[in-house]
Length: 341
Length: 277
Image (cartoon, rainbow over the protein chains, first blue to last red):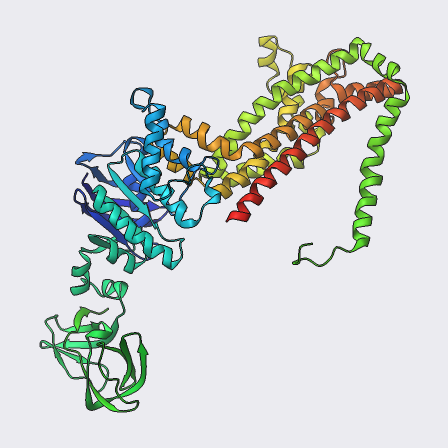
């Protein structure tokens, strides 16, 4: 089902948590809500599930307004950050819970429930663990049980709150791939909250970047890489080199000595030039100095001093590392400009 | 031995055992020895006395009302305190502890102030023709007041530690609030709740100070077991007093044993969690 949020506003005490958020997810889309802690992303997710109410604004699921619809009637699967498995029930009972609490008329028979639980245990790749208790499972297994439990009710939408937050890196990578694969198979509209940009960019179809209760940008991972809308987004989704400059007459003049002026279409005033380290070109001979060279995996990381400023440059794989202390020139032609202050 | 702690000094262990033996075990043993020393026949004869039987009945009645009322009330109060942030929450938490910090005499006296002959609600109670003070309702009220904190004190820390995510999960899975309570909230706190109920029951049966004030000491009518024991003792009927005291202590020991069993059971549960975490 599709999801639409219109002008969501929420206050906790006197501090506003969300300032009029508008957001859409199409049917079958995988949307990630990405932002630092305190950006309001979890509050937003809980609002979709009906676990939190907005002061104003509307939540639409499949086009229907969810105002006044309690969490239990929304038919969304919610996976909590700390799994929230029922500690006194076995894995199988956890998964069956959503089916067993249905009103009698819609409740499947015992055999049907057992079959569904077995299916789901197979889907999450732990068919033989139905009789275990949550405290006898590893973190990754608990996460998958939580997913199976949420999927058991055949939800209209899947909501994931930091699903990999508490797992170690290797398990995380596996589970991420598995989740994307699961999404491809079920085609379930999915909204995932995360503070990990790599995770969001890898798994989601589109990523909404939140900052202090506002949506900064919504785009595909490729779009976010290619054209970050604000300096915040640029900084948040990957390594950034930032160089303060001043724009006048369509030219950006750098505060750092020894960097050439660049054409820029921002209005006159202070600005910030931003680049990824791999977008900076490096050539021999010039006013800058090579101060550090490190071979980091296939790429070479070079530290260049221009005036008083140190600038990180990532050379493409196979490039010959420059000599330490040699003179060099920086090519900043790929820079994106953002207004400053 | 646990390597994180230095070996326990033997002197401290001996001191603790001596204190326990001298201050707790010895008096309790003396009580039972005294009760038994009368000869079983004479001890049992004490229970032929209709006043003593009335006291036992009254104690059981007071406990039978106080325990369910304060279990439900305590459960509801704990849930509100642990789950919601509201103005006055801190004040409420403090006031729930009040019966434990105030002298039991005062816990009785407040009811006299409210329902006694000159009390605030005396006219209303008179009009209804109900006697509260120097009657069973007064004993029940005083006992309810004194025993209210026991369940809350057991549940609030546990509920706060567990958080509300499991309850929220139940809701998103389609459970009604009622089903959520029965299938998630209650099972998660059942052992702590049982412990609280046992403590509450022990205190309801054993309370002396608060009920003394509201009882009026009418033999055969408003004397609970602790009050009956005192009355017998003051009448120089030591054998009967000891027999009754023995029975009351036995009830307490059964409660204590049940509690120990529960604690052992609960700890085993958490050990299992630790081992697999």
